[in-house]
Image (cartoon, rainbow, N blue to C red; front, side, top):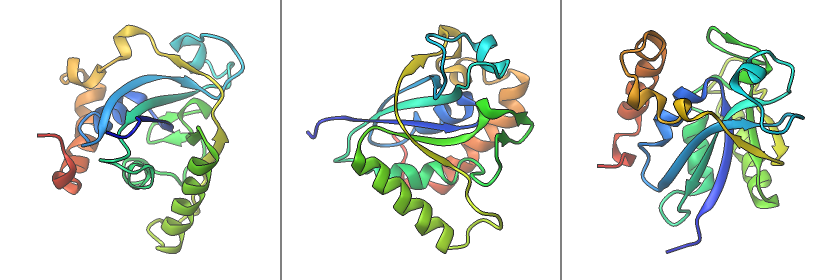
Length: 179
């Protein structure tokens, strides 16, 4: 088995992103949290107040023998809109920005290559605005945010926003889902 790798990705609400990546073959763990800000150990309320500079992120631990970083990013770019600055649907603010926090020069290079690949394929009508930034720190979100969709599927936001994203993901990537 290869040494596990870490990816830190922002794509709007972390409840949506965590629910998607939890199902993907090669993913060992997904933790919702915060990165990209200037305050140590921020709270959800502080991040939502837009005063800390953090993005809602997921930190994904994955096995590169089962899932390459490039393929992980290809999934990432299908489960959110990377062309809207500081927004995903009705979630507005820099805490909902699209960002890849790279952990190595190789991850940075791969992120730039995948952005170029997707841009050249003209999948989106507008340019990709995903930030590619060096990883600094990750702060896990409060316990109640972890596995939020799995634990709260009937919560109104989950039913209206998360469930359709997860269903679309599961249909598109059915062959890559954990059994």
